Image 1 (cartoon, rainbow, N blue to C red):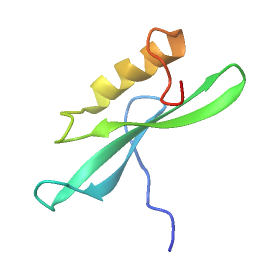
Image 2 (image 1 turned 90 degrees about the vertical axis):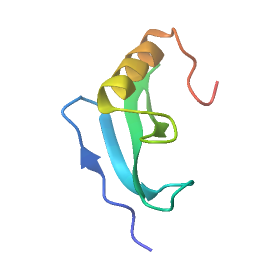
Image 3 (image 1 turned 30 degrees about the horizontal axis):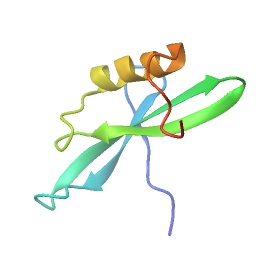
Image 4 (image 1 turned 135 degrees about the vertical axis):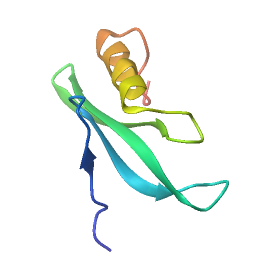
Length: 76
């Protein structure tokens, strides 16, 4: 099975894939962030469009907080 297509946003380090909604079964955007911390490249799921009320701007703010250390990474 091929990898899902990534769609870029106007925010650096933020992209989304098209997934299926858990509640309605329709199409839903799933936002991801990529960044570097302590020389390691990290790619994390940030949230879903409808389930988490996520937008690209909100995902970008969460990404910047994780880079600054105000929020822990998903692994931490």
